[in-house]
Length: 397
Image (tube, rainbow, N blue to C red; front, side, top):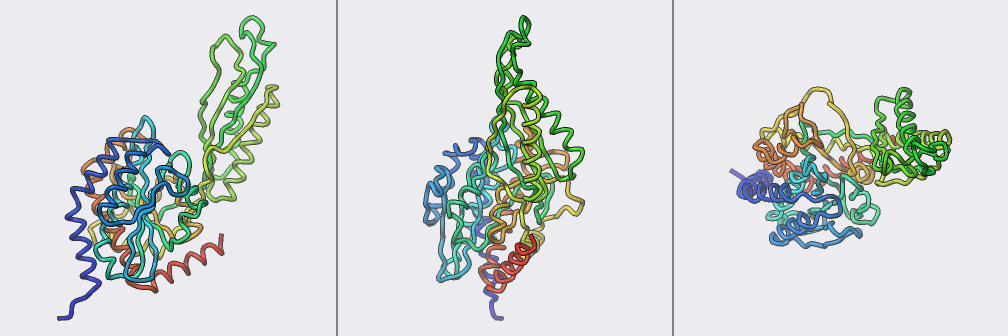
């Protein structure tokens, strides 16, 4: 009986991932135990680079002007598709890895490693790209602007969640900071001499909240106060607030940003203060899903025994991979590691990020990512189909 080379590749990859299980889980645990915020992921970046170099990958550090970013490549036997696995590894400050980026880092890194033993027999190239600061800055957007993804045909990654969704739907987003300046005065003896910057910021919050009543359900405008004055007996001279503006599309987001700015300007006028604003995060575009590549991942996921949540979406966040998806085909499946009632960005989710379910799902994710990339490397028509779908979607945006 003639041997099927495709099945041989698949078995070799799956068996190899099984042999790497201990190292995969150890990598996830190491990053989880050493949480670092965006642009400060020195330990995580160095750890992943060391692993990739030990497996024969050619690694370039500090790419795109980002100190903790890297690009690791493994070339095949000839020219072909260039596929990137995207590794995130930044944490959420005091919450640690409450978004499970330790899971993402290990899954993407070892998906690339899983393919490396067979790349000498395949045409193309696989890359693992370390993408810092997804939570607070938009590392992928910066790397995209700096040309780091110029040679990429397709990119893929998975994200831990409280549900399994193969096709991601996200909101466009950008965070803004507003600083109000007033005039200090004694808050008890002569308050009329002052101009209250905190009152201005509170008025802005109220205006933004009222604005939401006449906007689409896809709009989000949560905010926090980072500076509200120094002492209660001093009329606050300065106040600072941050707002995360989100919309269902880039067009809607721009409208949201404009209206939030009007709320700030109105509050300043009403209180006799001044206001200045600045974007504190790159604009995250809404993701353009590639159903062709997602279909490959779904088949591999199901073949590996994975389940998929068929209920309606529970909610939408924002991702910096969205910007990449406007440039070339991308997928970003969500993988369940926690019960439905446990939300990302909570201390409880951080515990699930290294729980038994996460460890089972991370190994399955490595296999599904690697096998999906294998499908693309083996059949040129698949990449052609992905690109045709991508172009059709871009023309419709």
